[in-house]
Image (tube, rainbow, N blue to C red):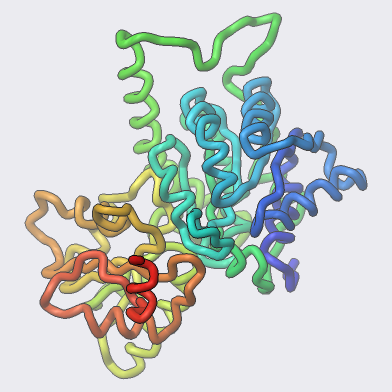
Length: 393
């Protein structure tokens, strides 16, 4: 049923419909509304689950780890410094092959302190072993949570999934969202029946101490499973489309790419703005397109290569930085073309929207204007030169 609803409330509602048995999270802006809603749902009997109040994000991650380790579906959410406080446990969850689902309300990292949106938090944990899905709008944020549980709990996967949604832009944005019914979710997402869990009647160990003889193989197995999910995700999204009527590739989305000469590559809510600019340029007869990356981990290099191999010029937008090196998304886009005969003439990198700075249509137009024969590497868009001297001391 269509609802005009805030993004955080929609996520809390879909989390409830996924029937987690344990919910544990620590409030942090801009994630807090999700936690508040779920706590109220449990207190009022709308959600039959245990809501575990904790003193920190590290404890929240530990609680959901323990829940899934004992065979209970669990949910958590966090943002920014809270995600970093969870970091130790985040790696453990993936290493133990526990399908926790987490919402990351993307927010900038301190210092300086900033509560607004960019994607530095989740991007910084890209190597933790979690599947990462990035939502363009609140409809995707809702649907990706259902897909996340189904994907993570697949017996051939058994991995945690992070659904990333831009803080404030989506978490506090009010949009029309088609909320699934409980019956639809139950049909698509069966009760959690883990392949393994801690049970005194059948003792086993999760996350044991291992030496050099075993560690490499454990990490290799995790890596291979992540890569294999690239084949599973499109199959799940096709099944999702039959049940819910919304079709996602789940890895990438092509927007006016077939004949495009210039293509923007981006993740998250900025894709909506980019689509408007693409439509504007198309109306003027200019062959411009967008490639939206939905799944950042595992990285869909083959799909990206096939989408961009015939494009002349590519502009990659990063809402995160790898300080002192190349921007994260752009470096991986370039790596996808390593050793290939067919590749774009130019793959330029642009850093946009850090700390919540608006990425406007003018910002996108400037990127397309700068996308010329000369390759650009990590060029900052909408930089304020008058502030640089002050920040440099």
